[in-house]
Image (tube, rainbow, N blue to C red; front, side, top):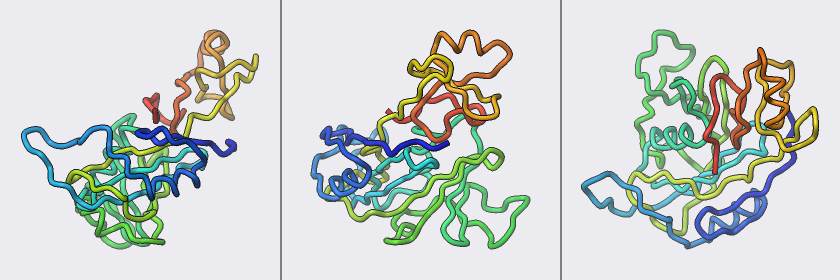
Length: 228
């Protein structure tokens, strides 16, 4: 499914632009986070922040994350699940070259080098120019491409992984009447987008999912929430 390039918005300052424009803006933007996430009962110390770009497949879906240098890959995994991925509590992993980072230290089946733990600091994994894949669900896999843009101009609370900017949801038209689509049929040979009215007719005997701002839309049991 080909989707035209999308624009996006910086969630805190409201700056808008293409993915490339937002990448440059966030590398210089000193606007602080809207809130200071942390664990109850303590005030986390500030840590150097990293700007991480996440691109979906199709590439019209993208995110920019602000991640503390001492955050763990598990923190990024949790944010990606909450924003774009979680449907049936599937397994996931990060892949860097031939190295895999997973929750499972000794899987019952494995090919290639022994996987490493996902409980590792982000600053020890992300390097400039090194592509990283995140894979969610090893049956109907959603693959995301991550890369380190560079340091953030602001410090972040320790262990923070926060959404800084994301693409505006693509516009999908109903294939039957042309009105804005509200659902997608996951049983048709190709994605069948339908408005609310046409969904009620088409839905008899078909499984429909909501149209949401996520590259996992219409896959497995995913029904949102999708990025803001």
